[in-house]
Length: 208
Image (cartoon, rainbow, N blue to C red; front, top):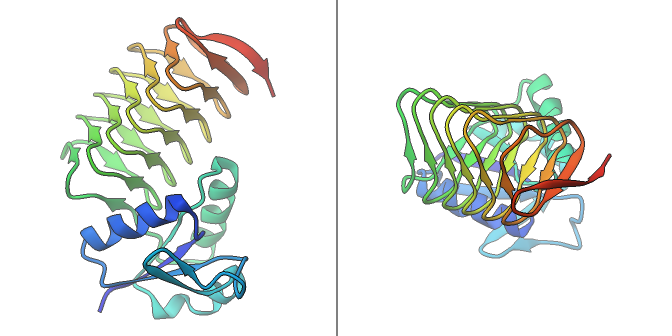
């Protein structure tokens, strides 16, 4: 039996668990620090907190993190990798991922996503429902590409950046680390680290 441990019993976690079962994982157990008050996440059990998961890693063939916050997910996955946990990526069978693309451990690719040739995805990425990442894109660790977002060819996205639902990014654009591109934004020029951009065309409204 293939058993998967998932850290983070969130709504996002439900989609991760469903994707895992579509990928052939027989059992999915959640761990969350809201346990024991939280004992279930939809159709899946919450069986312990994060500390308990570390003591039970030998019971699982795979581990992943289902936390939407990019910074937290990045930190948790870094810790798991350092602990030699069997961190796995999950790619829904109803996606297209080019044989020439690469996807790092701890990443999830949800139904309807497209990842084209020579795209390089770091660890802990979320490629959400129906998004597209075109040829030669480079996504650093813990990036989130939201549902329906579109990255044209040769776009680069820095660590922990979040491209909002329905956003689009013109070819060859460079997006820094810790950037937020708002829902429906049209990114047509480079974006520096820590910027929040919104609108059509996207403009900086804040920096962190």
